[in-house]
Length: 70
Image (cartoon, rainbow, N blue to C red):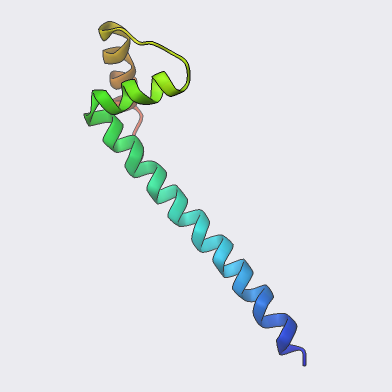
């Protein structure tokens, strides 16, 4: 009887923790890809409503390279 309550709660907690770590891993991989791919960075900036010129784009890439995502 008590297992009908405990098992779903434990499964929910494990799922939330697992999803959190998978999300963090995916986010870090995306940020690492943006460091090496200026088109990806330009696309993200456009989605946020910014239009970066080449100087701004290279500065943003340099800032991202200085910030380690590992």
